[in-house]
Amino acid sequence: MKAIRDCLDAFWDDNTPSDRVPLPMPPHVRAADLAPAERIAYRLINHAAEHDQPCPVNIDLEVATGFNSTSMGPKLVRNLERRGLIRVSRFQRFRLVEIVATGKHTARHPSMHADRPLVRRGARTATGLGLPSDRKPYAAR
Image 1 (cartoon, rainbow, N blue to C red):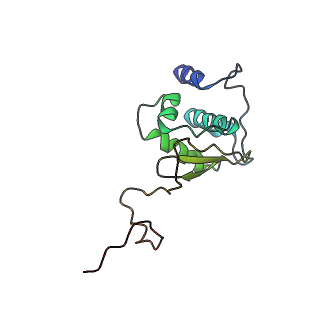
Image 2: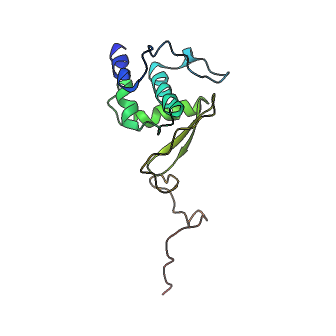
Image 3: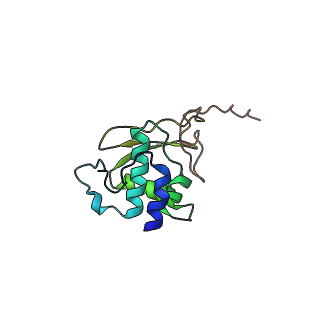
């Protein structure tokens, strides 16, 4: 647990200890109900929203929480979303997150040029789903 706190110090810019800063929580969730890794991920995302910064990428969440697995970043964000703490808009390479308790959003990433929605692996194409596409139709033979 001490290693997690040491990793977290690299992300904070104020002098107050991170476990004494109150988290903005919706009324249906208590901070004590969150796992330590979820609490750290929520703090990082909330800090980004408060200071108008982009949402932390998965590797930042994994380093701050002390995990080595590349699947833990998205899993932590999904868990927070399921608990009702955040709302996530996923795009092809980035995500925008809204903190439910405060209504604040994380900023757009500087390299986010288009609002392409996330298309998961193995998903059907946009035209197969009846959505408009920017691809040229194939000529009939």
